[in-house]
Structures are given as C-alpha cells and as structure tokens.
Length: 336
Image 1 (spheres, rainbow, N blue to C red):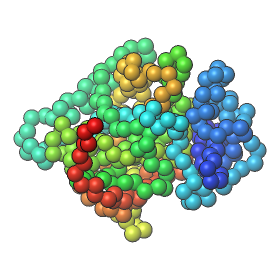
Image 2: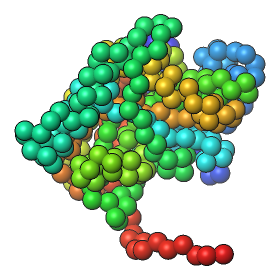
Image 3: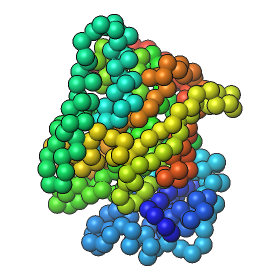
Image 4: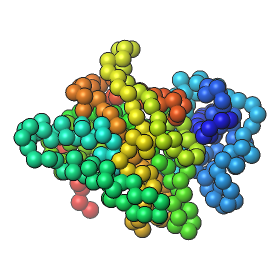
C-alpha cells in the first residue's frame, strides 16, 4: 500500500467481529488473521513492543472481503471499541479552526447584538493562533476542552444518529479524532486517527455559553476507517446534508494542522497532562475541532436528514441519518 494504512472493524457473522486492512482500491479489505478487534491489535503491538503497522502487515491475509458491501449492510463497526465501554472516554476541543471560531462568534452576535464586546470564543481562538503551535518540546497555550461521554455513545457508520426528544436541534461537526490507548505504564499511545461527526445541539449552545457542555452530551459517530501513521498536514473534503435523496447543503471541509491554530501535540499535551486520563487500559477519543458546520451557515437540519462527511484521505465517507428518540419525560430519582 502507498501512504498511511487504514483499517476497518466489521462483523463477518452474527456475534463475531474482525479487522481488515483496506486495500489499495479502497473498496476491498484484507482480513487480519487472528485479530478480532482493533483494541486487541493495539494491546498486542504494545505487548510485543512492535510498531502497529508492522503487526498489521504480518497478519494481513492475501484474500479480501467486499468492504463496500459490508458498509452498505451496516456491518462496519466504529474503528475502535473498548470491551468495557465506560472506560472509553469521548472528549474534545473547539475553536481550533477559523470556521468554528466564525460560527461561535455568530452565535454571540445573534444573542448579544453586533456592538457586543469580542466574545470569549474569539479571544481563545486568537490565543491559539498566537501560541497553539509552540514547536517540538515546548508547551503552548491551553485550548478549549469538553467532555462528550463514554463508549456507549458512539454510533457506527451508516447507523442512525439519535436526537434526544429534549434537544432544541441537532447538527453535524466534521472533525479529526485522535484515538489513544493508555499502556500498562500509564503512557498514552496513539493508535491512529479517524473521521468523526461530533454531533451537537448548537441552538442550546447559542442560548448561553455555559450551556455548551449540555449541547455536547450527545451521541457521536466516527469512522468508518482508522488511519495509522502521521496525520496529513492538509486534507480537503466535503460536509453534506442529504434530505430525501438530494444534497440540500454542502461546504468544503479543511482538516489537518495546516488548517488549525493548534498542533496535534499541543492538544494531546493539554489532555493527557491530567493523571486521571493516563490510567492504564483506558481508551480515549479526542475530537480536534470542526472547520465548518451547517448551523454556522444558517442552515436548519431536520429529523430524517443524513449527514455525510467525505474526506478522501480517510477513505469512504462517514454517514448517519438523524432520527428522533422517544420522549422520556421527567426523569426522577428513587431514594434507597
């Protein structure tokens, strides 16, 4: 293969799972012999003190499976999972791309008027522009950070994206996601990168910045492919909303450090400097910020819309259809 390797997790039969190395043509995959999950693959590479790419090469079978057929059938899984989903932490940052800063600032202007003082969002974005790429061995400026949930909230490619009944809206956020496994010595080990949809409620967020965290406590999706190796500096693609089979909104997506105000290393430092995030055996998915979003462009999504994030460097597009969840009404606590 040329360039970075890309892997998929899939279900070859009911109750089983497998890992495949995406072939050169991008539509077939070579099963990895004796490897039942990307999590176990990463654990094995750590135990053998072996580069992940070398282990993939050594276990890839010559035969192939029809990757596109698996994707269409809904048998492609998220690119990595934890056997204990509560030990898979979903977190991230924003305001790392110009598009996200513009969108956040529009919310500020809409709420507080055009003559309002510069928002905290724009201030932290400018801080990133000035000190988010400090160079090797140096610590830069601290980015924004948020908690999104745990592994139970990850939606597989092509699976429904659940919109809570209490949500005021739901919209896509196309992002690079770094995936990390903490080894037995407490050292974060980067497994690779994937494409993510950090699905959020921007209407709730726009009401008050202190509601931003509430707007993030939602499902998300990632995949379908895991990229092993260094993240390309400049990646281009498209974010689309499809309604009744037609594209009703589309905008170019620019990802990679060339389009960011922070380096990947700086984002990683400010997440993993907390000892609680260096607990051996834990998994982390870190969303690295969106470049564009339909809400920022004034587009209103609807239940039934399909989000499609298509960045060729990551392989096949990530697609999910937004579906409304049943209303659970008032949630009460039962005393013991």
